[in-house]
Length: 332
Image 1 (tube, rainbow, N blue to C red):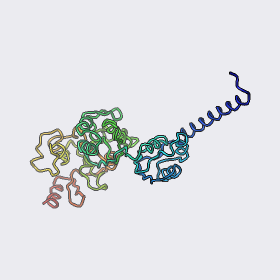
Image 2: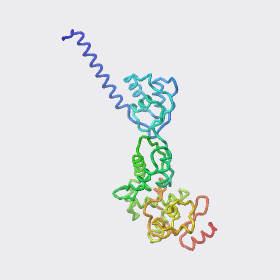
Image 3: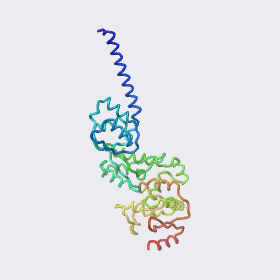
Image 4: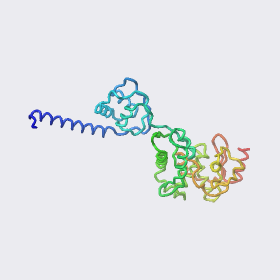
């Protein structure tokens, strides 16, 4: 049926208007929904808050980069009366569209914030993630301790040492393997850009340098001694001397003893650096940034020994006689 010219013109103009509005909306949502925050943020939306107030609040608190994007989305979807007040935990890198979906669902935190301390072992990390409700402890242990990695073309035994200690916001729906991959990715990002060259200059592979970093992490108490301690380890390795690091004994023992006794030094394990020369088979912990830096940039010195002298510090020695004197002074 032919429409009257005026009506046809009106419908045509309306269709064009809808198309233009749709295009503008698409551009706004695509461009202005760009992710912004790097870490999850907790926000409390008060009862009775309007769309404009919510958008501005989310912008102030670093959740939403462009308030106009959220206002436009709410208007397009007719959702102004459907937004929920309450406490929200917005995960990082969410678009305006994802934020709106959260506001329509309500304030249920989609993530768990977990702090992994420096020096934690893979098993300790598995325990902490399971305690946070992020999966089964045994599943994490299997992933951490049975999955080899390839770091700059060099294969590792497993993930021990390569799970970077930090505070993470893990999404509840993420799998244990995804969470493990995230920690490994963070570790790789913390390596120096020239890590491979530095490792080769030390006569090491990157996994071997990370193993040294794990020894430093478990033995050093203050940052100022980390590079010096690294120098001791490399010096002993060059001379084919056993490293004799107590922390490797702790790792070798089934219960991971906090205090090593003389009897423990005879434990039959490839991690026993009193009985075996060279590095242990894997890192013995997951080192932080300071220990990694020290392992890649050791302080060269004549020292071959050290002993704890209290208040976080160690006494370093060049000869066995000096070491025995330090032991007599500080440990007896």
